[in-house]
View 1 (spheres, one colour):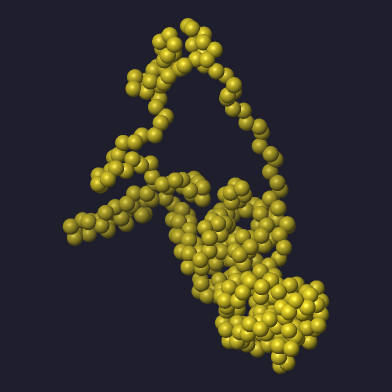
View 2 (cartoon, helix red, strand yellow):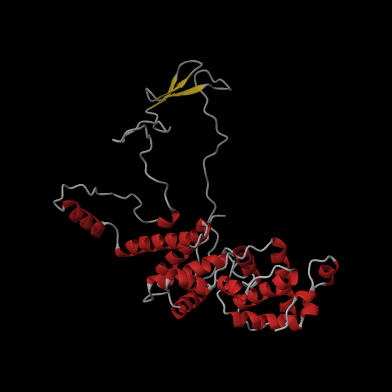
Length: 347
């Protein structure tokens, strides 16, 4: 189901009643010539003359038939045969807004008339809210491209920003902070989580303002990571194991390191090891622990640069895992020769 069919409802709103059933034309009705009454009629649409003609007896059944086929004539002044003259496809996010743009050329002979025309057109084209929405959509697309995020996340962030503007949820907050919060929430809902620090480095928004906008959106729309508008409570919270895959890819670690590292993080959570630590710190410490365990050593500096945490924080989480290493490392891994506890270092 498309993201546009599930807009973000407010938290206090109740589910709307189902719409009444819609009735369409009866597709079982057949058009039969009243003259020959052939059970298998051969009716032709003569678009050249605009007539509907029975090929069996030649009776004209209708006139002024509208040609509904594609028009393959070109109206372009440029070279080439371009039959398209209807513009781009409509954008569901722009529903209720003018989507056909008028572009004024810059070639005015140097008299400045083109600049004045463009300025007058920008003032008279759409309301201020629509212009702000267009600017926000461009910023969201640009930042998502810089972050190498798919178009799905960009669409979710745009839909959330539009709903926040409609409901005046974050009135008075900077637009950059609202956009950053929308991208952060869209990443969590699409199960492609990004940390606060990564979003702040991308958008240059302070962590405090980003947190305020995120909390306001979360409370206003009753958001849950990975949940949809119809099922807001079915998705699990974002954990460090979801960050491990991306961090291991940046460190060029093999897939078997990722799987064992995720299992170690889950086992540590069940034992209560590292409770209260941030997911980023746990992911960095678990990767360092797993790399030493499997003989793929990575320096603390490399892991800290990828995870965005200090070397001391990684060492602290590593010490917690090292103390409980007998419980975290499965016996099957040792028998298969995948891991070796002797490789671990005691800090």
